Image (tube, rainbow, N blue to C red):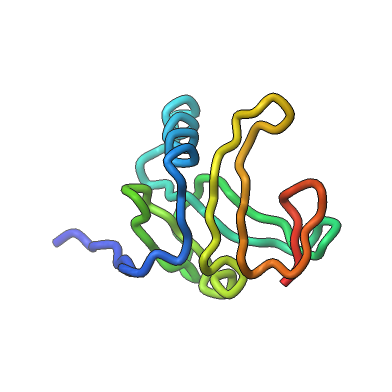
Length: 118
């Protein structure tokens, strides 16, 4: 019998339609294997203390698995405190192109848009 991947029904983050479109394009253009999930996380560093992690990766032991708008997502349990309620969007403007993180938990951010403190 095949082992099923447990998934949690709560959606701790939100992916906008623009973000989903960009992520699906990256998955297709880069030939990301089907066993890779979207990894959302944080790491120490940046001008405000933390930076966001966003990329495709295999599931690890410390991860929780989520299905968000059809996108399989993994997130380390310890990172959820900093990411609960975050909205990830895609900006395609003239002055700014890339993923935008709207984090209600951030107490401070910097001009780069990828660094925050909580």
